[in-house]
Image (cartoon, rainbow, N blue to C red):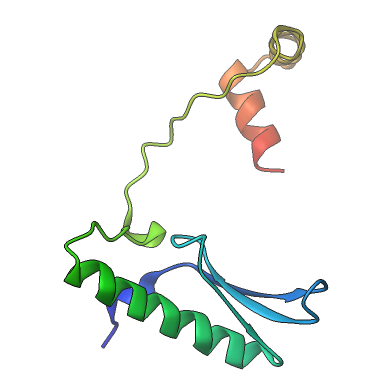
Amino acid sequence: MVHENDKYTYRVMWSEQDEEFVGLCAEFPSLSWLAAIPDEAFKGIRSVVKQCIKDMVKNKEEVPPPIATRTYSGKFMVRIPPEVHRHLAIEAAESGVSLNRIASAKLTH
């Protein structure tokens, strides 16, 4: 059985500053857990998130939905300098594709 807190986006990485592994959760950027080994950092951050959700529910606060369960339209607006916009428009025209296609290709690389 999958619990709701298992659907969150977790990451474990080395922290050179702390000289330990740090467990993180994208949906709860203010939370972290330090441990000497990666597995413990992962277990720690999952436990902290679970407790945080429990407290938020108790206090009738809105719990962020997991990124994995959110619906995305595939559209978002990006502001860029006019000269970059011009450069991309020229590149798109010379390639015979839309500006959207050029921008999408650059974002996926």
